[in-house]
Structures are given as C-alpha cells and as structure tokens.
Length: 84
Image (tube, rainbow, N blue to C red):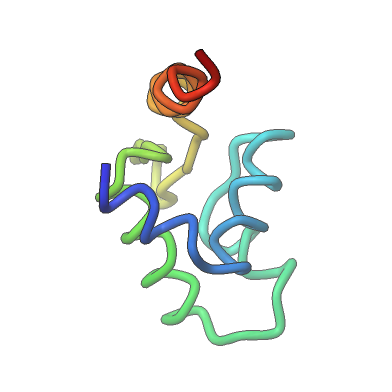
C-alpha cells in the first residue's frame, strides 16, 4: 500500500488517473494533456502501474493504459475502516 500512496503523492499522476477515469488511453494521448516530456510521462505511468493503480495492454504498436478500479476500491474500504 506504500507504493499506492507514493504514486498518489504527485499531482501529475493524480491528473493521469483523472484522464483514465474517462477513457483508456495510450501514452501519446496521455502526454498530449501535459507540458512535460514523453519520458517523464512514461516514468509516471510506470510508477502508477507498479502501484497497481493502472494496467497496460499492448494493442498493435501502442500500449493502452486503463484505470484499475479494484485497487481503488480496496483503498477506499481500508480508509473507511477508520470511520468506525
């Protein structure tokens, strides 16, 4: 869970999650929304993927990224345990 919180501790990565909430996107489509280099976007995507927040699938010559809602639901359930 530490990797998840580390991944969420960056505004760019949180914005990437917001984009993926709407649609699955490839790295180029994600990069088009930011004013940073494509290698930096790739780094952010790798951290999100290693934290389990997104998944990736090769589709032809592109890698398409999707939001992993399962881990988000697990985190939300864990946070809600503090409400009791």
